Image (cartoon, rainbow, N blue to C red; front, side):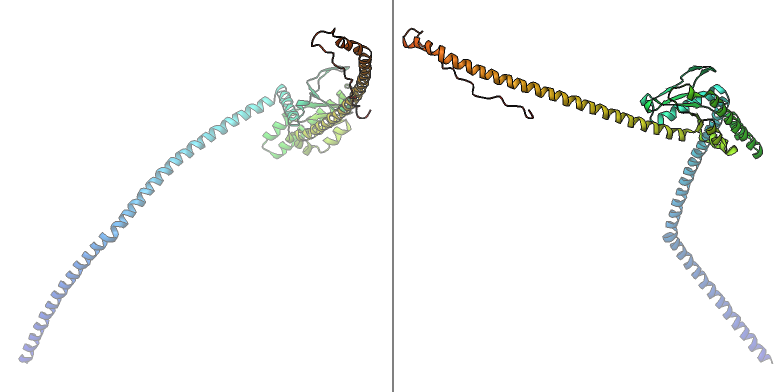
Length: 353
């Protein structure tokens, strides 16, 4: 039993010693491996992570530049938005001033006349002197002043009167409610109808010679006409029944372009007639000139015949006797009488004689 215990104790001591040695060896190996790994990681960091750091620093620099650019762009955008808001505020104020001004009848009328003048200019009628603005005539009902007289070929005249019914229209576009807006547009249509009736009572076609039996009521905006027509679709028919034609800038330009075309055709016809007259007159003058040249040729022919007759008579009756002085040695020394030659060329007759 003792021997067994002693053997067991000895074995245990041997195993413990081996375990201690094994642990010591393992620790040494672990420390060595860790040292080698640390060195490898350091070498890897030097060879790989350093360029990565440089790349990250470069990216960070770019990000900072982009941030600066973004801040600058944001500041510029903020300034532009602020300027836009200020411009919008000014535009709103100017629009309000314009609306306020257009509520004044005198300003509305002047604006309508300016629009009318612009339409005439766009139609190419300013250079023709076939319209007269602000002409005043006297009638039994007092002084009448149409805004535009358009002169047509053959002495015809079209009367154009500009009206600017803006009061109800401006109130309508300011109304927030649909029902109130429709009511205001209906008032606008009634104002247009009132202007139609007032213009029809003036009967301009009876005040001007050669005027067709209608007058043109010019509304200076397409929106004014469309809004009135939407509320009262019978406006056009009602105007025609009273010899009043409603016109907007678009339709009046078309009308004036047609008138301008008529004037161009009239000028072409007048020029053609004048050219025909000039051609006839030139032909008559050329004919008269030909007669004069023929008479001159005949006169020259008679003059040549008379000359030849005179030369022949002088040569046969006078010069023969005169030359005998030379034969008798009584003539001055070295002086001779030349023989006179007749003209043997005839006058060329004019063609068509």
